[in-house]
Length: 591
Image 1 (cartoon, rainbow, N blue to C red):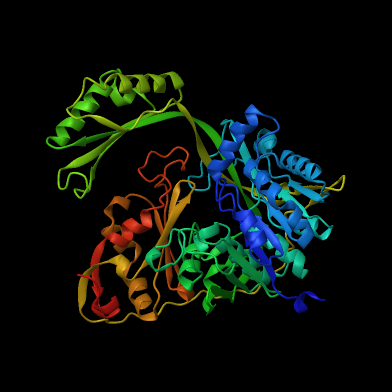
Image 2: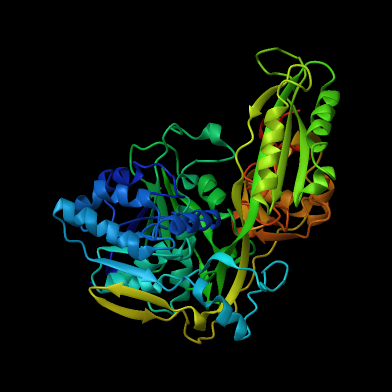
């Protein structure tokens, strides 16, 4: 059959991060028909964790849970002809493949395993800098300089995966490829796409982005979670990708959760920036995508347009930032502020210069809701203290001081989170490199070959941006939480926080897009003042995306914020009250 005659390829996700539900691989393989089993095991923080694992054991540096999952499903996948594509290789894809071969040998199986490497540029850092590539920080513009990273990986695309599958691989293990690449690669192989099939790849990129975080596409972390059935154990998502790149997001019948336009929109707006979503294989125009409910637990993604891939690929660099520790004290009853002040004085008095003794140190007092359930309306609070320093001994002394004050401080002192021993943390450094310097190396059947990251120099026609609806007068307003009509999904991307907001009706969109400008956003949330903020518009899905640059400092691994990954930022925003037109509120809306 030609690619156009083939049915859609069913690509299932079984992991959104290293540590996701272990049984998911078995559930997806046994739960119904699929063609490809894939998932995402890597994140910026995960690469730092794997670098420490690799330092301890040269046979480590990969997601070991993936190998254990494959032990349970490898035979079934081979029997059913299910291809497996995984980025669980992390910093050591060859060792991951070797571990899979050991599993296969014990089970009497003979899978053909391909390894995709070439993403690790750590050994090349000095040479790249000497050749005029400063590896400048994508947000600050600062050159990497003489910083010694612990990991440095280019985000490769899907064409090496396509090539490996085309040569007959049953399992493809990769290092750092983009989250969408593990979907784009199999879709391109199955349908026989060319590198210049921009629109088809843009559709696969959109579908890959939606399913790469697992259950976040089926109701997990969803703003209107009370409307989603079966969240006790939601099913993992499946993308049915057609020859033209259009796709249907679904899940196995009988599993928990739901696939709706809302749950798909939530993941669609997650951890992106503007309408142009750059990938090593294609720039997907997310502002052209249309989402439609095709049936129960079936959402169609169509209309995606693609532009030629960018000339550069993103590089994720992690460096050792130092050591950290922290503690959280509980306090209840009278004189909360005085209790907190005493605890702070006692701790910082043990260090010359107080908080200045450390590279970073501080504290925050957080009041707890008076509806504790245990003591009614008695005031209660949490005092959190934290330190970060390049010297582990300084941090260890902080731990000792905190522990030694237990019987000599404020009345009613109890510890909610004891100080941990000094823990190493990472600083994330995103940069760019020319694609010409980032080819993939594929090892398969005893042969090693190279797959270029450079796309053909093809000029594509200009794709127009979507337009906003005219401003309307929606009549009387009522003070209401924004979340009465607006859904949100937020998260981290390096040191930046991403906040996606969307509504379900055209008239709500006409109000939201003109009301929540960047200036109004800062006025409503003054804690964001001083940070550069970009607002991006997605008219087709009635959505906005705000990027608050620098809010998370040097990234999740080093952040001392209460919510270091900005996961709850969307819920904070939805809880703010503003004047919303009554006609837009459900049943008149809450007071």
